[in-house]
Image 1: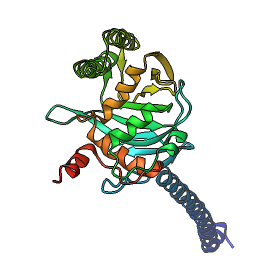
Image 2 (image 1 turned 30 degrees about the vertical axis):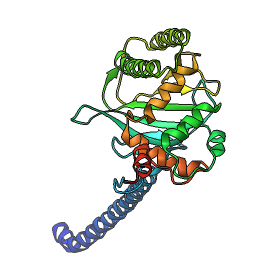
Image 3 (image 1 turned 30 degrees about the horizontal axis):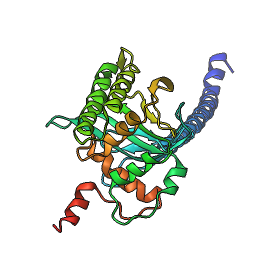
Length: 291
């Protein structure tokens, strides 16, 4: 048979062989792609499970969730989405437990300034006696009278600076000093001592900015002193008990710094302490007046 004839005679067999080889390669590629797709799908599902377990979706109509992130339990302030650790480890006090949290707002526009968390040591919380219809400020006053470790954790929701925070705290202390002076609760000697302590407290705040999301602590130690901590570093403090007591008490006065904090602490004291039916101060006054 001529070479050309032999070639064309073999052509169908070559074509079939090529088709078979191509089909095999194509099947191999398809199998490889299918395997890779399965691996990618498994990775996506694992990432989704990890993300949802660490950061579950927030529902603002329910209690703030407790989230486990990096082996650290936190509660989320629903007004600002600020996380507050359930257990706080200040440098100037034993470990403290989160009782409540809330947003601080200013002006009639209700501009959000910072989220505050209120912390107390576990032993002092357990020692709170049962007291029907006790107000929040009465219970906090008992904690401040006792040798309790207490802290207010402040996390700005917008960029600010130490000077702005210092001036706000100072105005609060001066107003309470003036009120105590008028009520005759301070002798001239005590009044002078308090003034010096307020000046010392002002000196704890350096110049510089405090970016959004950073942590500032006002820590009242069991011996009555107050310390200012920023991002784990102690900036200073004063040993005058009046300053520590009144700085913490200002968050629960008749004109509280944060209404949301006041409400959440009332709930937290019922959960953590041996107290029932904690009420807000204005609600208690309405009951006493028979309204």
